[in-house]
Length: 639
Image 1 (cartoon, rainbow, N blue to C red):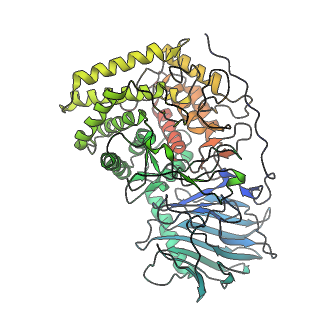
Image 2: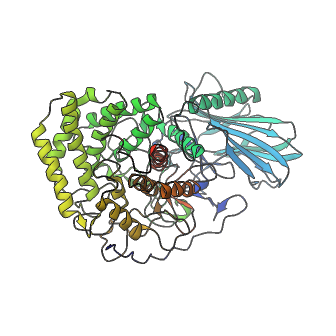
Image 3: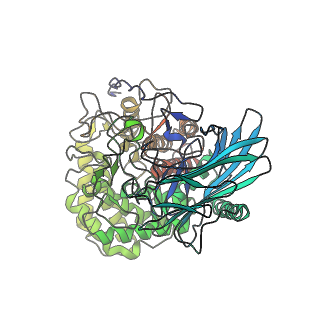
């Protein structure tokens, strides 16, 4: 079999800063994989391995950050309630975990055999009517330990003046949006300087202290009575356990799949049903590089994979709400479709850089907004029509009632399938005839024809069928080289998105062209050398055949591509290897089961924004595939 040889890998850049220290920091920054999400359906707080909040946008995922030290250790502010050395230096957390079936996190401080203090931490869920809350309950277990509480807000990514006052043991930040209040029990908060508040005291065995950060005016002043905060934490834990116990999954790596489902739930913006791509902005795909993007929005490229995961897990309210949001947002903004939307369904997301912010370990620019919004991406049309088909598979006609809108989408695909586009990866050099894009344009046309035939809907069936046949034939004529699919008509290199073709039903998983494509993807896109089998680059940025993407530098392996590989192997009938690979990849999650977008193939450290919904969706779908796939393969999800 003629499979292209893989070009040599570019040298892996030397990490900036220091090795990981006792507090889990590298060069003063937490590892991206060590950032633990706490969410409430409005936004998420990312907690570092020393118990500090590293990134938090109040009330909305895409709001300006209140604290963001993960992007700037000096200007990013600070929010922490936890143990310290008597000198005030941070005391490392020795162990942390999520409570089973819950988004409540537990942290411990102590030695090898003695626990000094234990803390539970969460965002109140469901959130209170007045806004949002972060909760802490800290208990002394053995001996004594110093504890600090500190709030150093930097609203508006540090661009908004800070008006912070401390009175009655409570710090209050006046704001043009919503007020911020921070209260703790067990120690006194004082003005540390003009724009921060904090305090330090000794926690003894048997003591129970608590903290609360409140966003919004609430029904009165923010208080942190231990019994009250503990009750709120218990109610939050119970709500999460009630939700997760109804998840429908019996298959490999069940704990990892359930944890991914909880993470995905935390990324859903409850007021609209939109699924946020990630909770952060500008965490780098290469340390020190420019591949730093704002992912706090909703991408259509994730839509059908997301909807499939939600329905199969029997998250029916979430699936229905997301489907409604997809209809409302895309119809409201009109055609052509936007690549991404705000969580409330609005558009206009201009990209700019925060010039004063130094970035994660010196990685700049730090971006807000995303210029890919207005690109032409043909895959979006296939994603939405596939979503409608998925709804029908699961007996939900929520999208079919909006058929006039979807008919316009199919007409658009019929008119424009032959054009080049920017592709699923949003290249920033020039549009091309990407094979994955063409296959998703075919999906839009194919699903449109199927829906008209199945339900008697109105549509230009002859034109759509002709366009679908022409699109499919062109892919096989111009997008196949040496017996396998290629990245684009003018680019014979490989692209991990080609692994999706059997998943969407474009081609049988055991078709010779597809099995050769799997081999070629692995041959070209597996990092060499790699200590983590199954990792794949999304495409090659080097080598004589690659046309690149218009950006400088390199990136890590794309984690969802590995989960697509698992599905592709299962559909090809190679379930044994697929199961083995699934077990290997699941083990690469952070210590709390959270995945960022990418993984450094040499070290296993995470890169890019986190937690990445697309990655967790890929994990869920791969697990679901393996749970229901026989040795002879399985039909795609919605065809």
